Length: 139
Image (cartoon, rainbow, N blue to C red):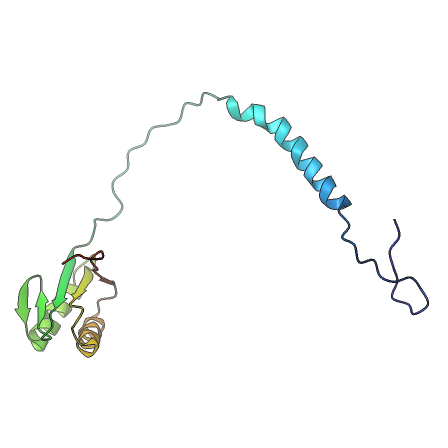
């Protein structure tokens, strides 16, 4: 096999792909798979130790905030104004483990109102927020 050189008087560079190394690698892989395939069908009996463990962490509570078209805010189905909402969120942020905040917003609600509620939650110290959505056609 000859390779081209870049000298002006020499041969032109080889433009073909050299497939010999690729074939060599494929043959090696084929041999490895032929050897290891019968081992995959055999099982080895192993007696594993038994251990009991306590759950590492309790699942945190969740707070559900809903915002309707008029911009009213509901915390767990209870209508709140901005100061009461901020106070309740601050109280919730002090709990351990910290509760998750689930936001459910009407599709026609103003984004500004959602941004204000999210900023209040962040200011209160809540860090886990998620949006609740409905599948297409859901009410």
